[in-house]
Image 1 (cartoon, rainbow, N blue to C red):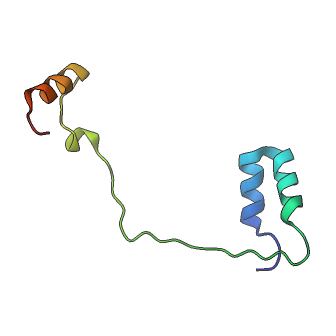
Image 2 (cartoon, rainbow, N blue to C red; image 1 turned 90 degrees about the vertical axis):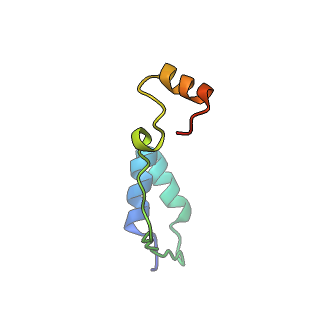
Length: 73
């Protein structure tokens, strides 16, 4: 796409504030600037559940004792 994308502008204003956003856009917005949108779709998504995956105990002391006992988690 020719020029700076709207998403680029919005992201710079959002994360850098008004002054940074304006200066960053001015740095890259010149005649001949071309940008591309890239869409990424994950093939796998997982959730890390520490309660069921690392079942060491309800408190730090219980977790530590389980580790000392050598029991697998």
